[in-house]
Amino acid sequence: MDSMKPLSGELSNSFDTLMVSGGVEIRQAQNGGTETSLTDWKDLPMELLLRIMSIVGDDRMVIVASGVCTGWRDALGWGVANLSLSWCRDHMNDLVISLAHKFTKLQVLSLRQIKPQLEDSGAEAVANHCHDLRELDLSRSFRLSDRSLYALAHGCLNLTRLNISGCSNFSDAALVFLSSQCKSLKCLNLCGCVRAASDRALQAIACNCGQLQSLNLGWCDSITDKGVTSLASGCPELRAVDLCGCVLITDESVVALANGCPHLRSLGLYYCQNITDRAMYSLAANGCVRSQGRGWDAAQSGGGSKDRDGLASLNISQCTALTPPAVQAVCDSFPALHTCPERHSLNISGCLSLTSVHCACALHPHRAGRAILSNHAY
Image (cartoon, rainbow, N blue to C red):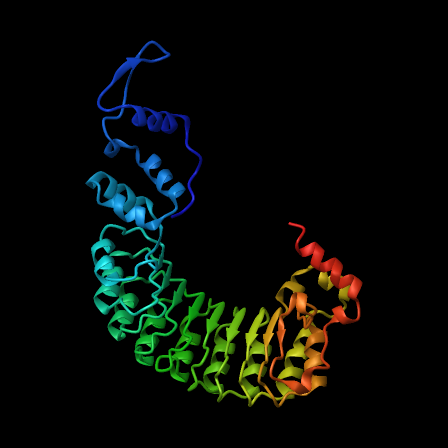
């Protein structure tokens, strides 16, 4: 549920009146007129009902309330923009089908599952009724097929965030079509979508989704440099890219991202064992260009947009071909990368040859402590 404004005096009085009234009650008002109390809970003003649901903070109560009467159903259907059914342990598909036509103004919907429940019929119900949807989480929906992606592509054109991680049945053809329709996507999680995340699909995403800022391709092991380089040229706004387990990519992918995505803040290369020093030096060179003329203190204080654009998270765990000088160059170029335990953002685990790499905190321990205290000041 979205947070609501504080109760107005009129709504507060309505709620107080409802709590003490068992039926219609006429009483003398302060201005000499009369007041009529609410006759039942179904007479609650819509704003008050939404406020109550917001305070309760339980989406299960919202669903129960929507079944009280048509007035409550309509009020909640128009007023609820954020809903999660991830708490549902059984029969989620039936629940989604029964609710989709009631909550037509949803903008955020989470259908994440612990065990597979959602089927194509449920996803199609969402696509048919929730046309204002902006964010959708379908992670771990192992039962969904291409039917669901095609339905979403036709019915939810305004999607900006889509999580289909673990949906291993989707094909790259369906993902290509989705990208051609949902061109406003900014965050896309394809982790484990081994059939959908192909070079062909990435080329389509690069062509259609130029606003993309975050892309998770973890363990999509068929991806090659061809797909990643297309992304780098077509999606310059990328800030977070996870290529963990993409074992076919080489330095070419990292070089393309370093050159084509100036706002890159997070890069995951876990177990990408074809990555060599060339990739690291490319990252370092681009970092030096952006931070030219800035000192360590200025970078730690967060002053200037260039620091905010630099790498702040890099996972090169199990990239065993890398050498200390190359990784140290990256660490020196991006002051937000840390090897110290307190602010660990450069992951080099599994790379025994890199134990000598250190962040600036090792040279300026008193400054590091000051930066940590500053981060926790608020």
